[in-house]
Length: 73
Image 1 (cartoon, rainbow, N blue to C red):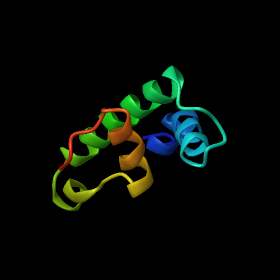
Image 2: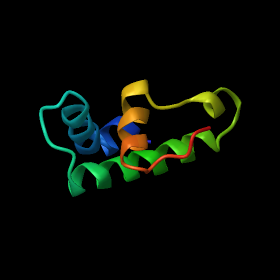
Image 3: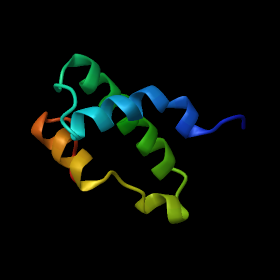
């Protein structure tokens, strides 16, 4: 695999980082980036084993809960 998930999601990571650190407003682009990262996280979790317990940071969970995008689990 060339690059990996970090390179594939670099812009989404930056958008979320800026929203979590309050450098940008939470807008449609932020919500779209969050949805993409949530989908990627579910794919990683589906690999099972040690990947099954991978999760978002508490700041990301807070952002998603605030916007009604995440199921707790």
